[in-house]
Amino acid sequence: MMAAFIFVVSVVIFLQFFVFYCRSLIAVSSKQALSPEVQEVTGIQKAASGEDFNRVMQLLHLCPERPEDRKGIQAIGAYFRLLSFVGSTVARLTPSMRSWTDSERGHCTYFAAIALERRISFSRNMLAQQIDA
Amino acid sequence: MVCAVKSNSVRRYLCLNLYMALSFLVSVGRYLVIHRSGVSSMEYAYFYFYSDALLTIGLYFALLNLYSLVFDEMKVEKYLRVGAVLLLGGTAWFSYAVIAQSSHRILSHFAFELSQNLYFVGLVLTYVLWGAILKLRETRTRLIQLVLGLGVYFSAFAADYALRNLYPNLQPVWQYVTPALGCILPAAWAFSFLWVSEDARLAPSRLVAVPR
Image (cartoon, rainbow over all chains, first blue to last red; front, side, top):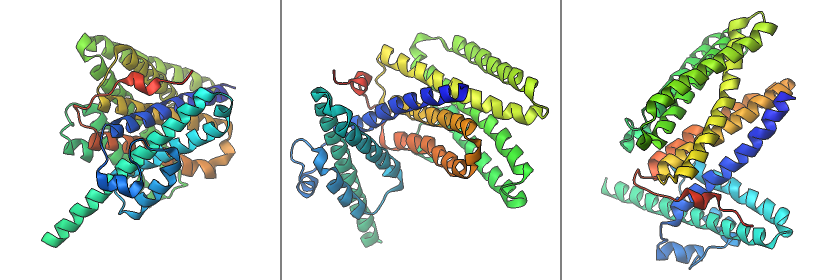
C-alpha cells in the first residue's frame, strides 16, 4: 500500500519535473535565432509548427551525432510525444489546452531546428580542421 | 565533471562535482567486483547496496549545495546545514527502526532501506526547492536546470524503488531499467554545464504557465 502510494506520488512529481525541465530546455533555445540557411532547409520562416517536427528530426539524424546534445534531443522527443498524446486525447475537450499543446509542439520543432544548426556548424568546424591538418 | 571543468564551474558547484567523482569511482569499483566475483555473487550484491547508500548520501549533500546557492543571499547557510544533518539523522534512525523489527541481517538491509528513504526525502526536498525557486523568482537558468534535472532523477528513482517493492519478481526488467534511469542525472547536468552559461537568465514563471 505504502509502495503504491509512493509510486503514484513519484510519477505525478516526475511528470511535473519532466515538463518543466523540457520547457527550460526549449526556453534556452528559443532565445537563439535560426540562420537563413537553416530556415531555408527546415522551411521554418517565422513560427515553427508541430507538424514539421518529424521532418526536422529526420534532417537532424542525417548530421553527425554529438554526444553532448543527444540526451536533450531525446528528452524533447519524449516531450513532443507526450504533447501529441495529450493533444489527441484530453485537449480535444478543451480548446485552450489544444492551442497550448499546438504551440508547445511548435516550440519543440524550433528546439530541433536549433540543434540542427549546432550540428551543421559542428560538422563544418570538423571539416575545416581536417582540411587544415 | 569534465563539462563542469570545461565551463569553470567546479568550485561553485563543488558538492555536485564531488558526487559525480564519487559516482565514477563507485562505477569502477562495481565493475571490478563484477569482474572478480560475477554479477550474481553475494559480494557484488553487498557492494552494490552499500555503495548505493553512500551515493545517495552524496546526492543528498549535492542537493544541499543547490539549496545554499538558491538561498545564498539570505545568509541562512548555518540553519540549512543543521536542518540537513537533523533530517539525515532522522531518516537514518527511521530506517533503522523499520529494519530492526523485521530483519536479522541488519546492516545490509539498513543500507537498502536508507537509500530508499533518502530517495523519497530527496524528492520531497527537491520539490520544496523548486517551490522556493518559483517563490523567490530565481532566474539563473543553469541553477534552474540543475534543480529540475535532479527532480526528474529523484522522482524516477523513487518510482523505480516503489515498483521494485511492488513487483520484486520482475528482476530481469529492473536490471535494465535502473541503469537506464541512472543516465538521467549525468546527461541533464552535462547538458546544463555545456550549453547554458552561468549568466543566462530565465523567468521560471514561464515554465509553469498552463492554459485555463
